[in-house]
Length: 221
Image (cartoon, rainbow, N blue to C red; front, top):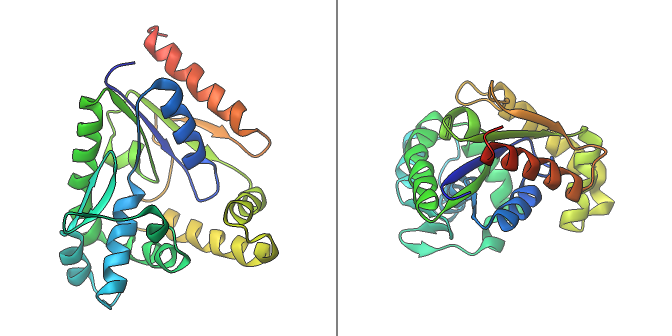
């Protein structure tokens, strides 16, 4: 599987991060989370107390973000994953990611990280527009979807906030609307993506299906 790029897109709670990690590990390639670049830009915006709707300011801040197969950095300093996953940064990332100027700055950053990962032997790249915009020529594209209630349950369990299920469900619905209705790079499957509904599937079942697809690609099928 040397040099292969697999894209895994989907909405929040569809399982793409868990699936991407497992598939990358089984294939022996890099797991690249391109969303880390947006989260790093959001974190920087919060640190700088920037207006999250100020396009030019956000674009300037995004130019200080870098991404490689090992994670995101701000001004060359690696950002810890817990900092990128805080509720405040998650909320800010949702807001800044709709900005066209910021996305234009981060697009080559994401592509460069994927290119480096390919040089290391390949990657499973996860995000929301990887198969459609960032890596439209990837060898295998997968789009995961799941029932909103199931996605909310998964996210609540993942974050240890089972008591806030209604709040999480509303947050996911809001993010779905933002991602699917934005003018630039809306969330949708690529025309040649394989769409998998993970609602009633276990993690292992989804991972197995993606691995079967990758194996079929390797065998020329």
